[in-house]
Image 1 (cartoon, rainbow, N blue to C red):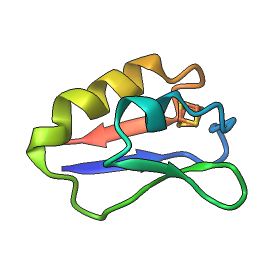
Image 2: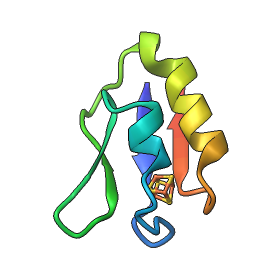
Image 3: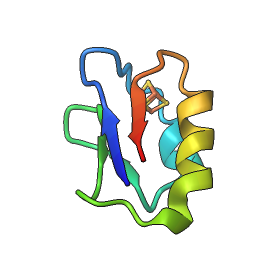
Length: 63
Ligand code: SF4
């Protein structure tokens, strides 16, 4: 599965990192990035929760 963060929308608030630190981290500019090209399916639920919790709808999941 592919997961994307739109850097234009991300405000760096951080809940995605709290919900799924395996998939998300904040870069040196304080913007969330996805830590891997191909995110394993076992992280799907956590990534969905991160996307739903994201206040700016910056996270997109491509199944
Ligand atoms: S929750 Fe959304 S806006 Fe906040 S850091 Fe994560 S991707 Fe960026």
